[in-house]
Image (cartoon, rainbow, N blue to C red; front, side, top):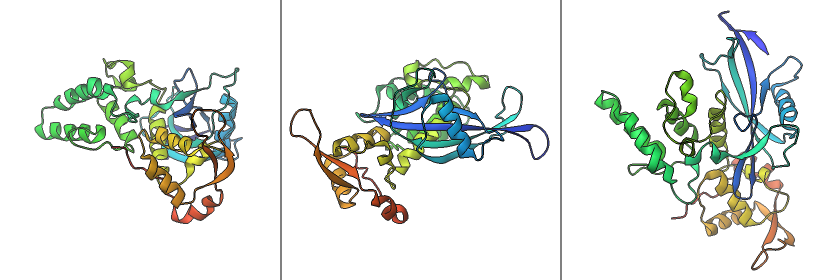
Length: 316
């Protein structure tokens, strides 16, 4: 869809972008297109009866994957966001939760680990070596590269807070802020479009670049989901009809990028009566068969007002 800016200076186009998330095993996954360099997206058109209908149409056309649970994420409308024709562009993004299915052969849509794009975010076995080995030195150099002592200190403090350095605890919710700090420091390839030289850091340290501002949109989606699993049981949108408590814990850990305390996790799940037993056990595997449970659907209504906080106790 194309409109006219309020001041009449340039037309405005609206792009609909989908952050479609699944958890497979212990891996958080996102559906990407264009050889893993973009998110499913397309322009809002007059034929679309609503923004969400337009989004669903583009996702199904580009990926052949139907959308289930979906919520609006954020609208990006910076003044300098323009398309190839010079029209000002705003991206209206959505977060969708689903289960991974087979990739269609006639599309280039493929499921990717979201840690491919944000490798520093996976803290399940501790801080990745790439932080101390690559990102921290580069960020320290960036912080020191200004003349003002006050600005140097402010930059260094931001680096410490964002990446859990200098005695600061890692905050898993700051996904977008960390990416934007790396962008500001010109350490990610996307920053090159603004005249910066390509980052000298290896791809394994800075993650896979994405077209336009799609990695920024993806970071927003990851942060939203990490925050949301703490107070709403949306993680069950990502689970199969029956699952074990271990599989549920692994899914939460995959999203959060943190290990959880097993006993605390199960205690809170039981206290909040989030699941019920199916009467069956998991087939195969070594050791004692694990009981299969399912999400108690009544929880959605019961917790809609009060909220439902899933446990988030880190292992020490």
